[in-house]
Length: 356
Image 1 (spheres, rainbow, N blue to C red):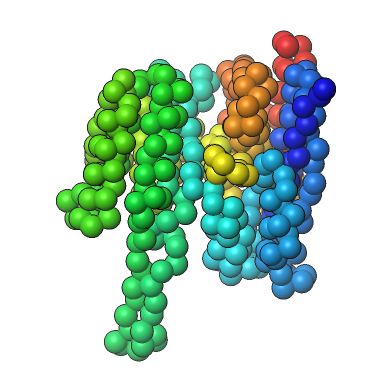
Image 2: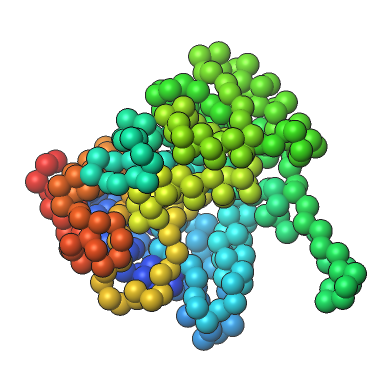
């Protein structure tokens, strides 16, 4: 019997639909080769939908999305919608309501891709950031007093629970064990200043580590982590950290691996439905021009297949991406690739069809 997966597709805003189309093109090629089936349902949520209807993300839509095996997301962000409305109303709500408590960000430099780091290559830049995704400063806890006056007070609280911290750390150790590369997990925090939150993180980290005797442990303040990611990225294997610090260091990771055009990630609920997306935004100024780089979205499709258990399909995508990056793509920036958005997708599909 053919295995089948139900995929909720959120093309989103700007160039999101263009890159999602290429991701689906590649997924269809892989599924045909591997003998499984993917069924897609589109959800037209995002800036255009909000401007037309006033709706952001309804309870009914979330309930419908929950029936699927995975979410494939293009981009959220519209120039005519105030920043924060769509991000909180769609992205954060999906992460929180679906308890996608892990943000997984592989940071991997492929051959043929330029890094701004002097004398560093693919052998040096290959690590993963595991970011706690549903707690910390992003819960929205806090408030404002006397807004708009000289006495205004703004408080934003970081919420860290033992359950949330432990499950994130345990995921990082399990992922490190499965990855079986450097066999080291580094806790990124700020124990010398954020003494309440990161006392919890640090104690939990070393308690969980006792269950993984084959994995080395390390700790680095977030500022030191940023320095070492630039100077000695080869020191890292798996980094685990909280929501805010993870948000920051994963953007740095994207730059050292070649930029947002190649950076993919996942919002994972290991017991439920997960969401897979490119790191980059909607790039509205390039909408409809066919020049945007779809590789990050295609790599997000790779992570989706791997998470669903289709390892062979994920490996096919990565091999094809590595091949065209080495041999075909001139530059990852929009309009400089030497190919259109759809032609990049065609190159990857062609490699999959000829080599599998």
